[in-house]
Length: 155
Image (cartoon, rainbow, N blue to C red; front, side):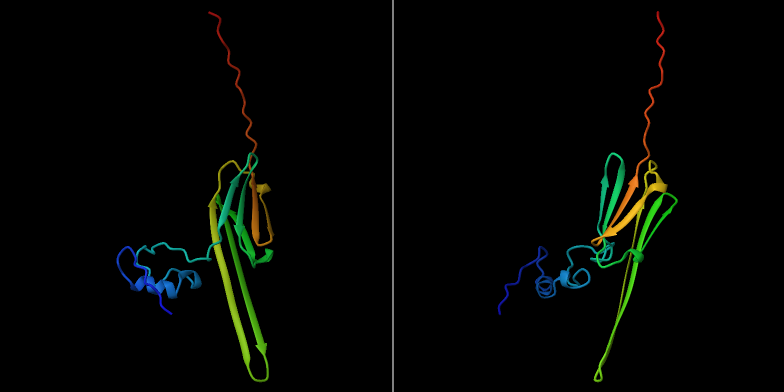
């Protein structure tokens, strides 16, 4: 099995070969051999769900992709103009047979925060979780535009 080494822009062969055999998407983060891009502030793949932020005439909507969770796993709080969304899930699986014993644990958590605009009806915020998507609806206050009476002097 012959592989042609692809050269990176910096001319190093090792990073390309390593990334070809150990691609970052198969592991838990950036490739250890990827030297071309700085990793400061890099968020590990999958640790924070992606969010869609939608504005309509009457409300803002937030959609968070968080498959594999249940409604009870979420905590949503409003505090000092911030919306905090957290989720935590712990699972334990065990299997026993006369010849072996297996016990596995898994833990998943995330936290996202959003700065809220001033024009919200915070008492009317709604959240639902269906098909792996957390949906939040943040209704806007109705803005009443008043046209002040302006008097015109007759000259």
